[in-house]
Image (cartoon, rainbow, N blue to C red; front, side, top):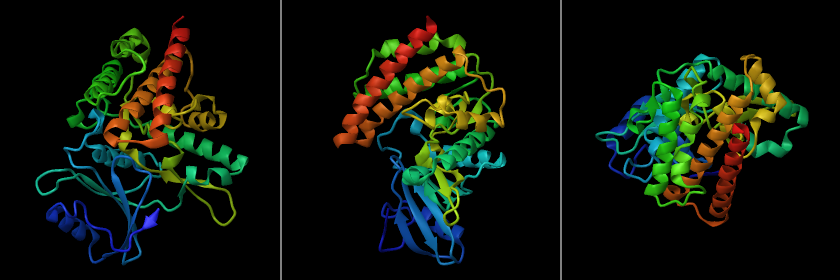
Length: 343
C-alpha cells in the first residue's frame, strides 16, 4: 500500500456529496484526518485508512455509484458488511466495530461505511513467515471463530439486502435464487459459461434433497480466506488471529459454505486443524455424502461468481487469463464430483 500525500477525502468527495462529507466530520468529532492511505486488496469497494489527529485509525469504505456495473448479489454490500460485523461481534468473534453506515440516497451518491481498524497484517502477506506450529494453531483459531459466527441465526436464507432479492424461507429456494442470479449475470455481461446455463440452473433441483438438509440460516462470512484474516504478534512470538475483515459477501445459509469461501482454490474440509477448531464449538459437524454434495455445489457457485465478476471489474492481463481457465476447470471438476457422489 502507498500513503497519499494529502488527507483522505470524505465519501463521495468530488461528486458533490457535501452532506456525506459533513456527516463524516460530525462522526469524527473534534478530530481531523491528518493522513489517508489507500488500502489495496479490495476489488469492488474503495478502502482508505484514516489516521486522525487524536491518534485513532479508522477504515472508510466507499461503494461504487449505484449505476456502476455489478453482479446482482452485490447491491448494498456495505450494508451486509455492517450487519455481519455487528452480528459476529455478539458471538465474541474479533471483527471491526461498525461506527457508521450510510446507504446511498439523496445527497449520498455512493454507500459508505466507517469501521474501526484492526491492527496487524493480513495472513496472506506473511504466509511464508509463519512456522508450521503457528499455522496449525492459527487454523484451529480460525475454525473456532467461524464456528462461533455460524451460531448466529438469520431471519431468512440467502443474501440479507432486500435490494438484491435473493432471500427465501428455505435454503433450497435461496440457493436456487443465488445460483440463477449469477447465471443471469453471465448472460447480462456476455460471459461464456463452462457448461450449459440450463444444466447449471438445474443443479439445485437435481440435488434439492441435499440442500434441504440445511434447517437453519446460519451466518456465513463466505470470504474468510487468508487475505481477510488479520494477524498480530509480539516481537518474535507466535502469530495470533487479530480478527476477520471484509464481511461484505456474507449470507445466511449452510454453515458448510464457509469451508468453500475460506479456501476457494482448495478443500478446507481436509484441514484437520481447521476442523478441530470448528468442532471445539460445534462438535456435531459431519462430512457425509450430503455435506460433500453441498460443498461441491457451493464450489460451482463460487467459481461462477469469480468468473462472471471479471466482466464488470474489467480484469485483464495474466490474472484474467488464469481466472478464466481456473474457473472453467473448477466447475467441471466439481460437476464430476457431483456425478460420482450421486452414483
